[in-house]
Length: 423
View (cartoon, rainbow, N blue to C red):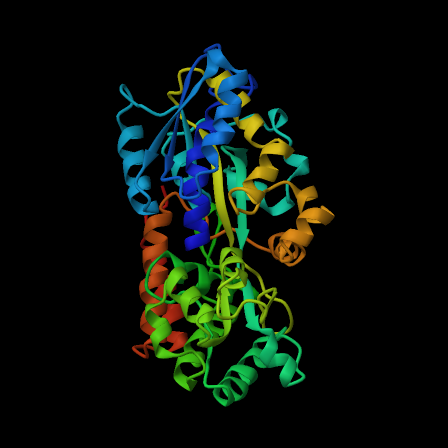
């Protein structure tokens, strides 16, 4: 999803940080030997441009540990492919620190591409609690959270105010308003990211989680999707298309396309990342001053978002693991995390920033985002996450396009996920 990708791109830039995340506890952790020296930080394209000044600050005060930024393609998929290719070439790896999407951590750890880290080197206790889980695999810390994210429900506040209705807290309220209120104003009801790509995996996981279900357990070793809760979650999406309160056009929406539909005034409700709220609220937007934001709804109240963002990891072949760890610690300090938000427009991992009065005034969605992150869950963990995601995308899209029932989709998910290699 775009916030995941946007965050992932900036975070990938910061990925160099991870190289030094570990201390000298145990063999192979970042910080074991290697002394201090220059670093190479690999990241997807830095779209916001704020990272350069952050790294300049580090380079100015650490002349013997200068960071060289290697920008990979903007596409998260292409950045992943280039990182994986480089890391497989163990004798000639160019990268010391990697800024990786949160759903890559398990894969990179299982492949032995990144080092386990010592938790004591980083201020993990100051982070929003759930984000740390995105950086662990098999009970060990393999990365340090740098940017987080969670899905939110954007809505046309002006219209709901006119109808004297509060924003929806449950699926039933969302469905009712999308089906009855939206047509009165010439709008489509509800949309998310339903093109068969990573965005649909996120939307489907959120629906399943919100209904109380899961997809995988035990770091991907166990398939848990075959449940009534999973069927209920998928049926929420399937029913929306069948009944028309999810427009068929949304079956081809990505983050950007869905954001544009909402910002152009064509949608009553939109599930998206916080960046979409910021863009729709900006001067010149047709809906500026007319929108609100709340947590995603669920069957009986607020639902569960999927965590987005990126983690910083240290390559197994980092030349100077101690410097890499020091860089990661620097990038997770409160001053730098403040810049992540104010200059990079990305959600930081430091919990205190979400309660800073000046920041809340500037970014009014912060309290809602904090609540959403605190109740969020990671995407299904698996060393073969790319294959897991492809299965979820394909099956859920087939169900949403009417090619199979929700119950059949759950059975097929269970069958095809069981065929994905565990390690």
